[in-house]
Amino acid sequence: MAESRTISMSGAATATLTFAPLSATRMLVIGGIALIVAGLVFGDIFAVFVLHQNANRIGERLLAATQAVAAGNSGAVTADFAAIGDFLENRGTKVDTHVHVIDFGYLALLLAGVQPYIAIDERGKKRLAALFLTGAVMLPVGVFSIHYVGLKYSPLESIGWASIFADFGGLLVLLAAAGMAAGLVSYARAHRAPVTDRALLADQSWSGRLLLTGGSLLILAGFIYGAWYSAQDLYRLEAHESSLLITMADSAAASHFGLASAAVGDYGLLQAERAVKIAAHSHIIEFGLLAMLLAFVQPYVYLSERWRRRWTVVLLTGSVILPVCVLLELRFGLLAGGLADFGGLLVAIALLGMLAGVLRHTGRLDGQGAAP
Amino acid sequence: MSAARKLLILSGIALAVWGMGWGLAYAVFFEHQALDAMGGQITTGFVGAAQRNLPAAHAALASYAHSEFNYVRQVDVHSHWIGLAMVLIVLGIVLDRVNLNARLRWWLAVMLAVGSAVFPRGVILQTLMAGALPMALAVVGAGLVIAGMALAAWGFARAPRPAAEA
Image (cartoon, chains in turn blue, red):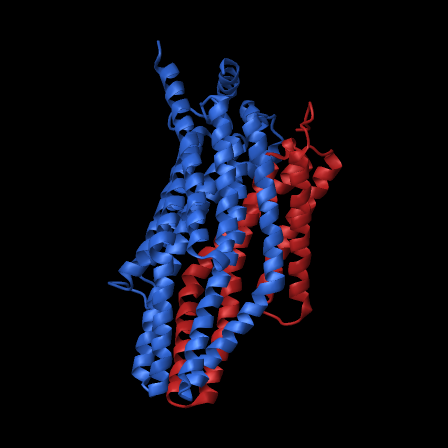
């Protein structure tokens, strides 16, 4: 135990150079992990309380629309599809919020990893990091608000203030990323000597190695599954969706309610199949990337080696459970869905554990700096 | 910085900036309009059926299928470009820890950089032209990305070498 503590502390000692109070690296590491945790928790809440209920409401409205077609009531059809559009916007903006918060968290960790290679002075780096984090919060908050703000007081025909706010956040992120990219290009062109803090990137701890190996295997699995999905399912599902919509319209027009409602049921199953397959593909890759990014952060995680290993195993376990169980939802329904949520929770808990280690590291550094 | 690392990091940054610019431009100028159009087309299709005008209904539903085909791919390229860019940059940063010789690392970088640029282009080309070329580009790009990632995973899984190339 004493030995493992020494290992992690010696790793942490190499991590002091660019981790000063309010440094760009510290802002990006803490901000990045916080964004990822926020995105994961938001995703879990969305999956439990919104996703399935929303899908059911869409199915009900689609059924109502086919009945309105049979009755020849065009006004009711328009109202039903307006409601479906509203439900889809509700779902779409929440999925986009979840995805963008997490991806900006990843990007923040990534940018923290390349800070030693950015040829800009620390003041400039801090400004870019602050700009990035501001945009990374503005965009998801704006996207989340789109459904509730709508087009109220908007000067534009189809874009509301929440969208404008979100787009502005995206622009800030883009400008910050472009500024850091310019610093990286400048570093690469100048053939500068390796910076002292490169030791961070050469961390060879057990946790770091497992995160890199496990992460790359998860990404590879996600790539292979994505290729299989696009070859086997993508075009088949698109063609099937189109034929189901035509069946719904034709059979409702001919007052064949049984056929129409069967097509609505099949349409719901098709959307569920598509959603779980895409979710499995994207989540396994996202968690693989997260694992690799967290390998960079390990020297900043001021915990005993035993706890760093525990959080690593918990994170990778959750990273496998969630996508596999999402995929199994088609066969096992809510049981698999509950396990998938548990997998997401494991990832969030492991991230919070690592964040606690990073905060301990910052406290230790600040304490040393304040000591006479 | 080795040539392989430079290739991965710089192509990753270029791809990330491109992907974000694409997403921003698409969100500002096209997405809302595309969603409005899709909503209008599917509603028109069912209203046509309610009015017993099935040819008009079929035409509107076919337009909806076409718009959805394009929309899915336009959103997909945004997320794939940025996702692949992050994979490139991450691998560029930790390339020293991929336990392969310099030549294999170079080929790993080339496969991932070329595949990441070509694969989403093949996807987006499907919205502009029919035929086998866009799909062939997507398949080749995806194959390169998978091969490069398999090489990286193998390199990470191997026991670390005592000294790594910078």
